[in-house]
Amino acid sequence: MLEKIKAYLAENGADAWVIYDFAAANPAYIRLVGNTFSTRKCFLIIGADGDAVIVCHVIDLPGIQASKKAIKFRYEAYRTWQEMDRLLENNLSGKKRVMMEISDNGLLPRSSFADYGTVCSVKRFVEEVVSSADLFQSLSATFEGESLCLHKRAAEAVNAIKDEAFAKISKDVRQKGFADEYEVQQFILERFRQEGMVTDSAPIVAIGKNANSPHYEPTEKDHSLIKKGDLVLIDLWAKYDRPDAVFADITWMGYVGSAVPAAVQKVFDTVKTAIDRALAFLERELPRRDVCGYEVDDVCNRYMTEQGYGEYIVHRTGHSISLGESDHGVGVNIDNFETHDTRRIIDHVAFSLEPALYLPEFGLREEINVYIDGKKPHVYTPRQEKIILL
View 1 (spheres, rainbow, N blue to C red):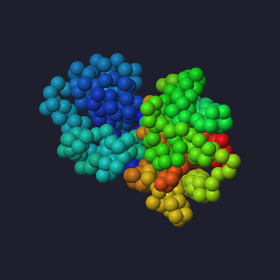
View 2 (cartoon, helix red, strand yellow):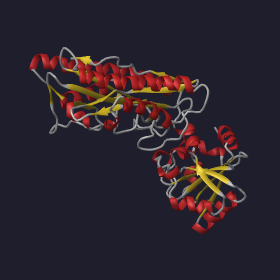
View 3 (tube, one colour):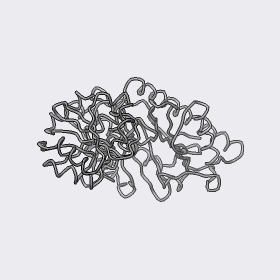
View 4 (cartoon, rainbow, N blue to C red):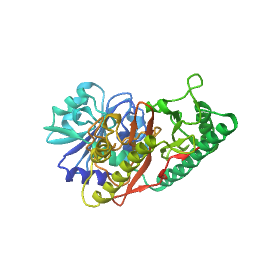
């Protein structure tokens, strides 16, 4: 790992990576040093020459030394803030360009873990501080091996549970004349539990105007009944209950009736084609050049705008998927809408593609997950080719 970091720094003209942590908040620090809860400011300084030192308080030093991951580093401990300053100066003097967890204009919160004051403190000893966003994601957002296998398994499981949920809606409508958003949501959560899966929040089951809110969540007190003529959105995400597991996150659409209305079908076709175009763009461009997250967002949104739906776009095309307790990861987002994500789409990162249109009458979204390997996109979540008739 250190050799990889050293090579990245050299290739990008940086003298060091200054990883700042307080209270185990920085994923890059945790990945390299271990989950040691620092009660005072800690710095891991990795030089392009391969030298790596942890600057920490004497109180935190024993806990850091106890971490198996930290044995590869040397340690310099301080007692007072003046001593901390001297250690930073000693280790940074002579370095011109260093990387830290910041982002241009603060647009990438998942890459921003160094506060303004700490960055200013480091700037006293170096000429320039630049963003470590791409290096950070290569360390913190990539996964392969067993984690990739668990992502694939999760994709199969959530897809099967999605089918069961739509089947429940169809059965309930036939037998009772209606289904219940909240009951279907709870059915999905129970199936997650039965499969040994966990989620960070409840799935979305939404009809018509409810689906206009991207994060609508039916509750026991506030939900709607699903009846004939309703368009139904189900967004569900889960992972296996293991620390090395990765989420799968999908959204599918169903319609209660014998035929999908033409206006709904047109919106679905637009969203589906936007995903088709994004995948084709990745297939074409990744093998021959660096591609940034914002470019893929542009592909989707440009097409949907050309079709006359631009005013109904309210969020980015996709979010990162990586190791962690949230389905929203710390890597590149497919975004030039809410932010301008200039991080590169590199091998072993994953993200959702979920273009959506939110019209006054209904919201419609399709969501798949994309994993990059060999500079190609791989999709392990099945595509929705047509709206499910219920």
